[in-house]
Length: 261
Ligand code: F6R
Image (cartoon, rainbow, N blue to C red; front, side, top):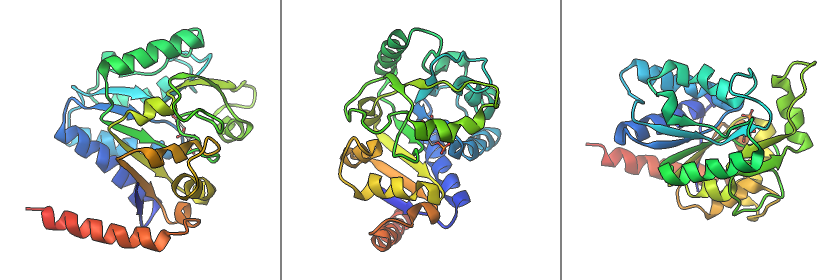
């Protein structure tokens, strides 16, 4: 894992977005894995700005991590709606090229169909991830199999508490989602994860420095060959090897600068 402790949340967000931009520049027909949630809201404007600056997404294919069971694409809290609002409506990515699980289909059918679709178009070149307070990635809550495929998962109380802020008080929040599994996510060639704020610090520590365990699903990323984790200083406060990651990153950046023509 490459652990990049940035100067600020803005810096970490911009560097995460830059990875996506560089990926599409280098391979215009990239298959991207995309994420939603509060943290990602600040990532997508960078992609929209890159598009306005000339970057085309016309040949990209994208797969989102998850969708709430019971919410159709026009529901304002659905992740399909979120993605149109934050990204898809503002770039030249045709609706036929972006995919999310079908929140209205029977979950087993929606899950199997989504897994097949990813296999047919994949592998995912670059998978974007956020991190749940409890260490979830996608909606793979603690206890998830580390080789799981796309399926319906019950949301934990912690996740329901965290995400109910997006739903109005008279609206029932779904208690399950169809999510890519950890095995599905792990097939991505490269993974970039963004975590911000001290509320994520414990999960970041467990993900990076804890044992590989279903108790912290994100710890499965330790087994992946190409993961970059962008953090702000608050999200990094519980890392025991924090100084080492800063030191390693200084060397990494020096090497990158030397490679520049
Ligand atoms: C959403 C997703 C989730 C979020 C995570 C963090 O597609 O997959 O894993 O990334 O719950 O959410 P925020 O950024 O709202 O803290």
